[in-house]
Length: 172
Image (cartoon, rainbow, N blue to C red; front, side, top):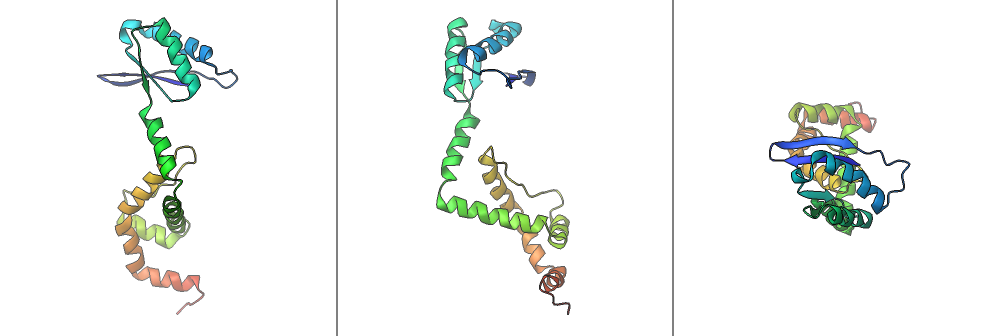
């Protein structure tokens, strides 16, 4: 669990709590965060931003009971990821993600398309999504759209014909 202080001058990493072998109930989380709140000073704390898991909400209720001036804020990133995950369950989204992965895989696993694409988009790389954050699949598709001019250049590049012929065994 990471503890980050957000203030007008920017974000500051305060610390990290290794919860690997801990039973992560509301009391444990409350106690772990209380130490950071007290170290920073209650007058310097205004809000707690956590994910939306029920245990975290319960921990927040304990914290607000001990520190009544604190305000609870659910994590917008977590909400958005859940929304994108729901959108991603549609047949259309699954089809788009599958095609995008196939295009990226094709380019990244073959030296000629990769070299041509890097020539035309040297500052832009294709993204592969992570499984834990569904939003990365949307970012992958968005990046693929930005990469479209390079993909078009792959196909019209004279080296493309030679490459395609080599795939099919035609060396003419």
